[in-house]
Each structure stands twice: as C-alpha cells, then as structure tokens.
Length: 330
Length: 111
Image (cartoon, rainbow over all chains, first blue to last red; front, side, top):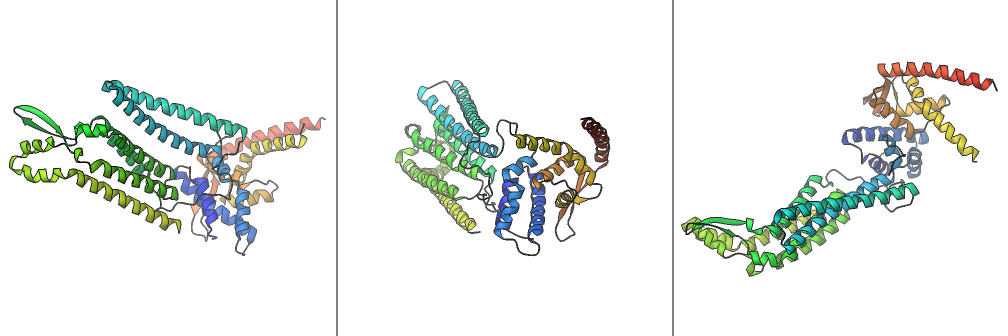
C-alpha cells in the first residue's frame, strides 16, 4: 500500500461534504481504487509524486468525483465546484448577518425605548430579513459565477491545491463553537437588555426589594464595551465553526479577540462603580449574622469575575497556540 | 456546425444509456470496481473510473447490486454482485435492447 499525503488529501477533498455513513465507505473504496491504478501504472516500482498526480488526474477533480458520487446533476442553479464554496460563503454571511442584525436591533431598541414585545418582534423580523437578503445575494452571485464559468478564488477544482486532512485531535467540535456563539449572544442580551435580573431578592419593611448585583447606571453607560464583548465572542467562534480545526486563522482570530477582550474586561471591571453597593444591604437583610462573610465574597466580586475571565482567556490562547503549532508540524 | 462535437455528444448519450445494462451483465460473479473497469476495457467498452464507481454505488442504493468488503486479502476490496431484483431488471432491459437494436439495424439496412 502506497501511503501518500496527496492521496489522503484527495480522498478527504472528495468525501468531506458527504454524509458520515457514506464518507467512510467511499474513502475506503477510493483508497483501494487508487492503489490498484498505481499498481497497474508502476508495477513493483514505488510510484513517484508524478505517477500519483497522473492517477488522481485520471480520476478527475475532487469536486467532479464528489458530485458524481452524490448523484448531483449539472442542470442546476449552482453546481460543482462552485457549490461547496457557495455553502462555505453562505455560512459566513449568515453568521455575520445574524450576529450583526441582532446587536443592531438590540441597540435600536435600547436607544428608542421601544416596548419590549415590539422590540423582540423587530429583532426577529430584522434577523430573518437580514438572513434572507444575504441568502438571496450570495445565491444570485454564485448562480451567475456558475452559469458564466467565472474563476473564483477558493474553488477546489484541481489536485495541486488540495486542503490538508484535519487530524482527529486537530478538530474543533462544532457543538463547542455553537455553544460559544449562543453564550456570547445571551451574555450581550442579558447585560444590554436586562442586567437587573442578576439580583438578590429580600423583604425590607414589609416590601419586596430586588437589588441588582451590578450598578445598572454604570452598565448602561458602558453599553459599547458589552457590545464589543458580544461581537468579539461571536467573531471568534464563527471562525472556529467555519474552519473546524486549529488553523493559523483560528489561532490569530483567537489571539486578537482574546487580547482585546482581556483589555476591555480590565477597563470594564476595574472601575469602582461596577458593583451596586445597595446589593450588600440586601445580603445583610437576607443572611443576618452570616452576612459579613458573604459580603466579603461579593465585595470583591468584580475582581473574582475579572480573574476568572482573564484566566479563561489565557488558557484559551495557550491551548489554541499549542494545538495549532503542534498539528501544523504533523 | 461542429461535426466532431455533435458526434462525441451522441456517442456519450449512447454510452450513458447502455452503461447500466453492460455493468449488470458483468456482475453475475463478484467483482471489485477496478477489475470491472479492466474487464470492460478488455471487451472493447472503455469506461472511466470516475463514472463507474459512483454508478456502482447508485445501483447498489437502488437494490440492483449488493456489495461486500473482502478484508482477508492483502488489500481490502469492495466486491459487487447483481441481486435478484437486478437480474429481473437486466432480463427486461436486455429483451428490450435486443428488440430495439434489431429494429434499428433493420431500419438502417434499408438505406
């Protein structure tokens, strides 16, 4: 059996968009076919890189072969090799438009003091409208490219620029990236729209009182920092979702977003005004004798919060750099 | 008029139409993809691998062929063989082909 990186890359490029059940079988079959073709061409002599290229060229471009395996017809709006790139671009556009529209709508709602249910209605409408516009634009653009056969950067239509095969350990779980995006969006919404929900509830002079943990005035004043945290989080996880492995792009995106995130977090949390001092009255009311100990914990909450965030960002940077460097050498 | 282009287009259509019948005819015994390419080539019906391998999978998904991985040999290989449904389909298209080609031959001999 001839083991060769070009063969692995070719098989990966053919099978990467197939369903997992089909992928494994086609990859195994393709491997034996290529080995048979090489044996036929070279006999007992070890095949050279050129022999491998000739055999792979004979099999056709990865996009062409993949399209035949999937039974795709060329009588369609967008066929191969444009289709794979189209799906890739569509994912990026959808992620960017959704994130951008969400934040824009939130900002619009906050500045115009719209009633909450109308704001939600506007937000959903804005996101759906944005996604549909992005979808239509990208689809029309690629349909035009396909019909006219226009060359576009990133088309995987040859065997000279095949993408590397991601190793199992090198992969970034899609679920992790999606959870990261959802977390960033929820964080942004909570802090921009309803920071008061992070509060303590107690009864004072027979009246129910809800005292927020953070100083709401300060949180409102620093809306641009919260918005920046959301955008940075969505941007970082979108790159991870799209690349799916520890690429250099993922490494640079993680480094840049985490450094900016860290600096902004320090600016945001080191301000004395960040905590609501009334919150400690609530603790006193609620816990009585034990209040002093608990208050000590919460009085430095901004510092604890800051330390946790900086620690997480640092670990994330180190892990990403180590994995990217390690796997790029393998 | 580009005569060569039209002729090559028509030949491609002929081949497309008869390829499934040819493949079903050969798979009375188990064969793997590359051996089938060679067998057909030897019988004067050259076929490109990138056309045959996806076709074998499609016929398998339609239930006309079944496959099995042979892992005991030095190289693991996927062998295909015709199913009962495949035999039935082959019998019918073969009968149709014989009748149709006879008529076409007769028609052309009239010239």
